[in-house]
Image (cartoon, each protein chain N blue to C red):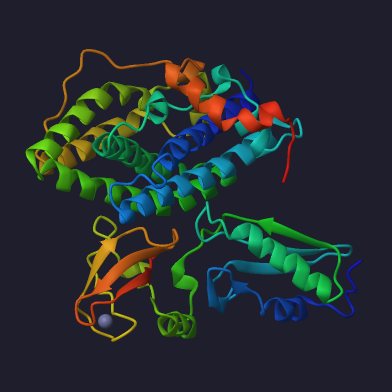
Length: 165
Length: 252
Ligand SMILES: [Zn+2]
């Protein structure tokens, strides 16, 4: 049973706000736009999530984290539902989320409207380490599906760029 | 063929292509020519497996026999797989893998653009999601075509040979079968004939820009819409399905 007196959509969102993206531990799944909604039914609490990429291997961990976090808060009947619509986009990230990524060493994505999809590398990516604009792409596919690999021509360091999606 | 049977088979087609191609691409894990390509090809493999899961999960729901996506992936026989033949061919050399990626990704970009407008909301949702990923697959394969095609004599010749060998497998991408006729009528599936001109235009432009000749073939391979495959699919399934066949319903 979900005690609807004790637990509302907002209070559950609050509980879930501690769960971080397993691959980027400085941002929460809410800030990433993975956590879409909470629906409090009479007998079950339904958590709606969406994958960043269809094959994102972190989804299993995220689901387990949601289950255990809510169990610790005394909510046992939890159902996690994965949806594909609306398709996840990096445009959902707020400016403060992008700042957290930058500080963590990951260059933040540009807005999808700024992209020329036939030439995904044709826009300026700023080095998150020394803030130089003179950077170059090494590969569209980095350490995870959501990131590309860049290098800075000024400080010479390689860095991850969160791909616009 | 009922509408339900048509939808089920169509979803198997949409799921089997990325399942088999994803399996093939994963063979590059630890064998990429450079580390970045090892990562790229296996990332693309992951996108494919994710999409296969999404379509096969929905196929299992439509079938209505209580199966899961895993049941459909691991417990179906060769003759009930409907992936296009081009997806199951061995990985060959790097040029061959890149040529295949280009021929498939350009098709998928057109197909998912079309299917994101499907009257079936689940198909439209998965298509819209996949389209975002496929855009990067196209850019990846295209950029490698430029490099290999305009690289050394060796890289050029290998890429040309790969396209020469693969070209006869492109006709099948556009074959319309019983399920297409039923589903196109309801706006669930797209009419593949309408994509053909755009497809060959797009591929030819990239080949021209890579100094690669457009291959000329006498005939196109066919069979997958009926579940008839090359000798290679059985070998993939033997490896992919081994564990679930030997130890049914094993979990860990
Ligand atoms: Zn720098």
